[in-house]
Image (cartoon, rainbow, N blue to C red; front, side):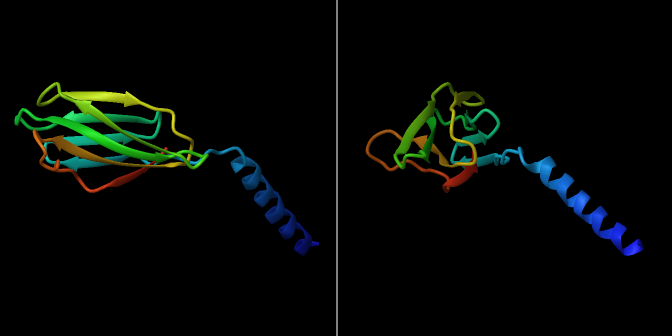
Length: 125
């Protein structure tokens, strides 16, 4: 009799755990990219980017991001903050849950010079 009780407890516990997690959504991953004079923060809850200017160099800073939609097309865009040192601009999106968003923080140099940017960072919506 004792051996019959133990398997029933294990089965009941396993079923309760499986039922409790069936509707759980995948958690997103917040990330930060820090480049020369710029800091970009991706917040998965609300799918937003915050583009901050961190230096008194007079340059506009920006976020460059890439996102692959479910249909396979690529959304590639730039979000600027030209408000000056110590300011931030917020941009809201609606990316698909659990999808990767690749981005980097850059400073917009005048003329044809290549802009200095951080390494690419990947967040999860």
